[in-house]
Image (cartoon, rainbow over all chains, first blue to last red; front, side):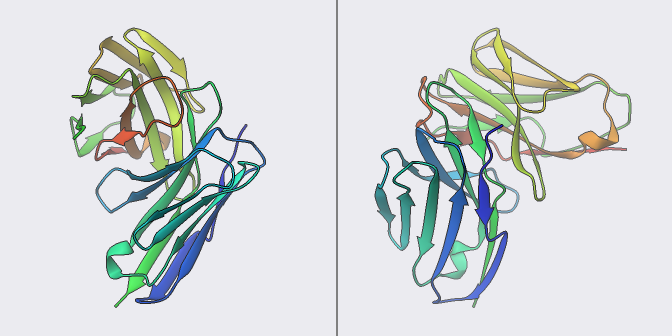
Length: 111
Length: 114
């Protein structure tokens, strides 16, 4: 069974701080996605990375896919209260419609 | 924008009841998925469908069945509800055959089995 481990599980920081969330697996994925979920809503896609070593930036968020396509990280610069939410990574193996979701990182940014 | 609509936001049922959760998407997506979300366990795939009348088991199909009679609608059925099926249920859809397609989620149904 493929697993995706996220760390940390919980993170509480002050506005303006930087943070990194990790998503790790022993399996290779053809692509990896990051989602954010707010209370009472479904997850919303932030980014998809498909190439080993790929780095994508979305304003203050930087996403990196590991060279071996087994891991990924999400770095947030100068966190804002609006970044509060549950961050989920999801990996897809080649030739499958299935996505394996990580356990999630619950981020709280305090004003 | 893709819209995935789940029929109920909150649902309370009794043990042994047959429960139907409905999901409709409006973007002609081939793939549809049912997940359950529990604290500390993330999203776990129950069933998915890649075409009308086609379905495949996910990681935790026991106690559930699904129906996809029309492309836009994917139903999750709890044959005989049990308390351990109390959870948040999320439906999603995606376009195409490759895993790099984004999944679009509904807002979830919080189901309580008493």
